[in-house]
Figure 1 (cartoon, helix red, strand yellow):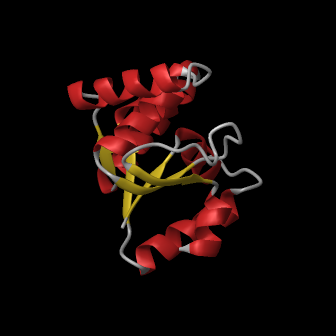
Figure 2 (cartoon, helix red, strand yellow):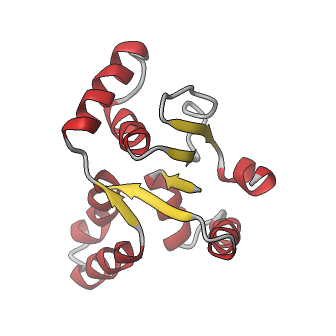
Length: 140
């Protein structure tokens, strides 16, 4: 099984917010069941913006190191075509969200987890289910 995490989940996991404990439990569940943890190169870029704005190079480097244990999918030509199809089918879909979903679809993820209510339940060829981390914890 392959589970793609949207950027917002990494922020909540690593920045100690109200959902951090829940996400640590989801991550533990994934490790216990040997579920592949997947995200995209967009996530890597998005997650290091804040530390770089704060001129915290050490934090940016810690984030980069953390991604070494995660399958990071590039936004390549195959993903670009999926992105275009998603944007054509769902014009309201924001480009960053379409990039994330396209990357997940390119590598055939079973789940795409997000905290973004606008994405939940979206049907995407190549992705089994677009849902919240709570749905995953309850169903996986």
